[in-house]
Image 1 (tube, protein in one colour):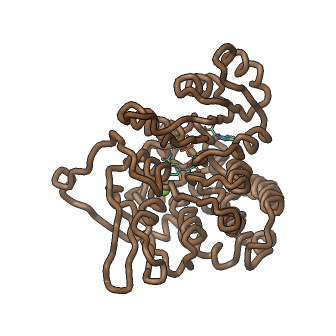
Image 2 (image 1 turned 30 degrees about the horizontal axis):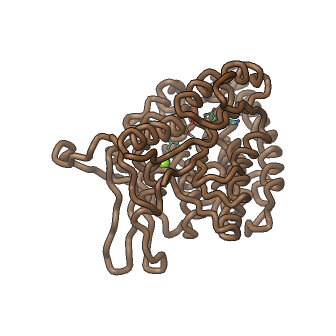
Image 3 (image 1 turned 90 degrees about the vertical axis):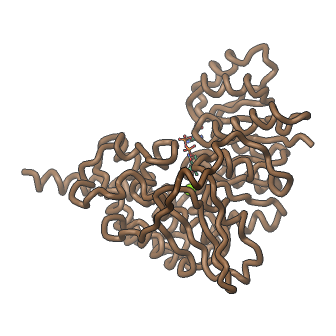
Length: 402
Ligand code: NAD
Ligand code: MG
């Protein structure tokens, strides 16, 4: 049976990998494996239109309303409906499909992820920031509406693939590549450039998540994501540095068994699994794993001195959901400032640490009382406070330089 898909964030790294999965599956199966209901993008109107035509989508949504006329013109005569604006993102996420792939970056993906689950659509979740900010809310909605959240982040998808009988599990073990600065001394971290931070050794990804990988903030967000997705306390989730990115994560059971999922580092594999689950696996053309060629897998502990992010995520989880929202928003603001040349790489974790100390990070204990608008309001207020923190940091370094 052909599965209908909507891809939120189709022009990004995950979105394009998903479309490669669709292309290969449709080219190799007797009947089309997937059909596209809707594709969305933020500002890349030309990229969106090209993909919508290539993949025969029914609808294409550009978030930026200023580009509506251009999109409509570009799609005229194709039969593809052009839509725009942030409400349209939530509207298409609600159209009945077999799966919505949430692949927008940042908390900007939250409203459409929420809308999809509220309409009873199951979601392949790559957009970790929505789980970090609204994990209890999204999990409750998924349960209430019988709409599955299928983990698509490679580590969480690995755990999902090998997780059976959660009551038999002792520990979850998230692996981390360590990013481009695994061997960089602390003194040199302050001066690294955005391009150096985005040059990930194993994965090709969008710029925000690439910076997050370099700072270990990606793994910190993933620790929170795993805690909410699998309902595990942080004390039973380990992080293990594994520079080859071959083992994507592990689950340790009470009988001494540890199960892992392995593969070459290519997002097409977890995406293919998440789009087809619980049905037959989709064939992909990713490079097959050859352990003889790889020869050695290595592991090391996280250096909390150089990379405090994991420690901060554990602190946030122990405070409550408001602290996770603050951690995410401080990171989003600081990464945007770093990419724009407005702060140093090492300022990212300083801003997150300071943000976790703010009063608004401490407003909750348990999270299910948060509504969607509460989460969004806290994020907005947090952004305002984090911009002030960055201005404060810059003012301090200017006065030190004088
Ligand atoms: P990306 O920057 O390459 O793509 C982001 C997509 O979201 C684009 O289509 C863009 O148009 C859209 N978008 C951005 N801002 C938007 C906004 N304000 N409103 C609407 N749409 C918006 O990012 P990516 O690397 O593909 O990552 C997407 C998500 O998947 C992130 O949450 C990331 O953490 C997660 N993820 C990515 C990878 C990876 O390999 N890239 C792996 C695991 C998880
Ligand atoms: Mg990941």
